Amino acid sequence: MEKTDKNVSIPLTCAECGSNNSVFICNITSRTRCRTCKAPVSPIAEPVCVESASFMNFVGAAMAPILAVFLDLRSGPCRLATPDLHALARDVAGRAIILKVDTGICPELAIAYGASSLPHFVLWSDSEPRLEHHGAVSEAEMKRWLAPMEEVEDSQCPRRVAKVLDGSARLVRAIRQGFAFGTF
Image 1 (cartoon, rainbow, N blue to C red):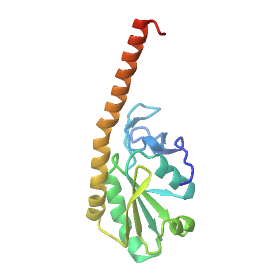
Image 2 (cartoon, helix red, strand yellow):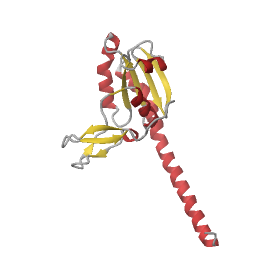
Image 3 (tube, one colour):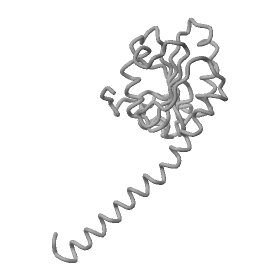
């Protein structure tokens, strides 16, 4: 996999004041506050159209599952899948990211991920492809694909916090013991 840049950001528009807020890709599913009016800015709720470099940045930096859809909007099945993608993106906002890759603009991505039959779906989690599917499917089917990934992300969060807390507790004990025995 190519090198990714976790500091790449995309603009999210505040519903209250209309200002653009730059949000890092790794925080794209998190709730943030508007830099101007301090109102909550909702996570992205529409498919994100990406090109090669931004695709790699999303896959490498995003903390949520990603459903990448390789499309050619001139084909009937791809046009049929587009409304379901928009509905899915609204339903999973804050929990998953939907990426649209136009194979006419980025044929190298289509070739790299074997998108010979369109639409081609690739579900990513932890920077690795977990599922691939060729052909149009319903919104319900796409939700079914994302459900186990969302559960994994939710179940890993307490473990990550527990690891940090456990490490912090060990560090505090070591510092206290070091001070007690005069090793620092």
